[in-house]
Length: 335
Image 1 (cartoon, rainbow, N blue to C red):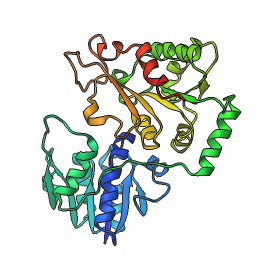
Image 2: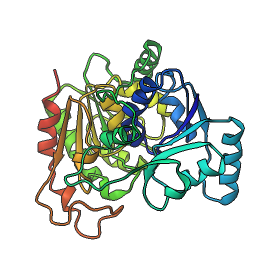
Image 3: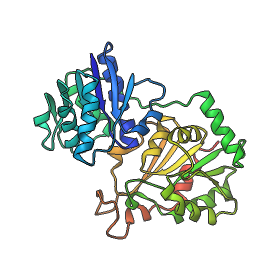
């Protein structure tokens, strides 16, 4: 049996789907499992624990993109297609690829393209996304395992990360605290760079930790604002790491301080202590799944939760989080 699984496009969602992939592999041990995904996911699945092969898919902006992707999948002659994505286009893709069995949640008009489906119910209170993916398998009649999200970095990857940090001036005898001020979803998820800077000052004044800043190229301005406020410049890794290199560097951290974004879940999967700052999103759905982790969230915000990429008001959900309380949470994880 040959199964292709369409996995999500966001780092956090991919990691939340790992327990479902592990359960799928255990439930159908003789099956050959492939992942259909954005090309970047190869760095998360390098060890081959969760799947046998990866089919890189282009972004399906145009009909010709979907037709080309469908031809690629059809040529591989899959028996079953499992959709861990919720989009209409992903279900249409599997139908266009003539995959005989197409499984997924029945929602947003996708039922027409599915041969076996599970009704996607709205839960109140909401549960974590890890359970959302596992419930799909349960609804399909497959047994699921106790959920665990775990990534590992090989010894050579950890050594490369240590050498890179040392080459950039990091004292490897000091605990490393990584500040991650970005969030790809939009500015509504970002604790202000000025607050990260204030946190950095407290950490330099009151601890013996070394600091590093990570992020995408578009986070360069935030990194510069943080660095300019500190007496000792942090290691600047913003826009300078591949996903695989980010895993290696993150594995060396004593604490990872971050907005609600993909790298937070990378750190959590590596069992690096996380201090996660939540504004417009609901920690019940996307919090770090494992300990050690501390979530800081202000509950007394009348407009919460929202799905806005930019706050139309005064961003009080994040502005009410002070540098002092984030420092206390961070310092609690230091040796």
